[in-house]
Length: 234
Image (cartoon, rainbow, N blue to C red):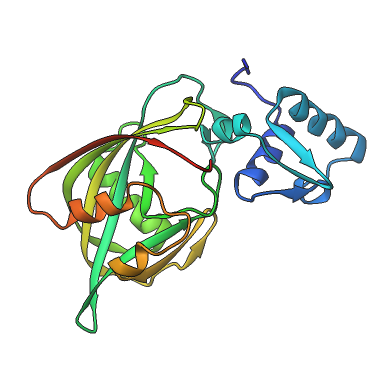
């Protein structure tokens, strides 16, 4: 499927709604109160492009739509079409509560991997240092500041059961200590909560690399972790 970098603003708004929810009704997609005929035209166009599908009275992103919207700049709703590995920061923040080590976990509430549990991540912006990315994502998504230490790099490749490469990502792994601020428990795109290592590993829909990342932040040496994963759900 070849889709140009320019997409109609109404269509971009529809995709943005579905980026942050598993499915939605027709009326829930029309956030701009567009006339029915006009709005129906754009919904049909997205159906023809194979970016969304209809099930009963609800619409949702197709796998192609999830991959497409995952390349959204959600601030400008522009698409980055060049295929290349994504570069990001992954932050595992720690604290001690009643003598027990706790970790800041996050449930992802946007596509792809809607509902999965892991840690705070974010893409490195143009001209941004990775430490700045880690600090910004921790502040924007959790409302916290912390002492950040780079402890490793992860190269993660997610494959479908059919063997198709879905995502290719590099993460700079940071340990966050001595957190300060009031935790943002829920934001557009996820929810945050403190919990123990043991409880994290019991969470449903856990990202495949969580155990390895917890082990990495507990070590004093720099870690490079590279692995291919076959994902059950995307």
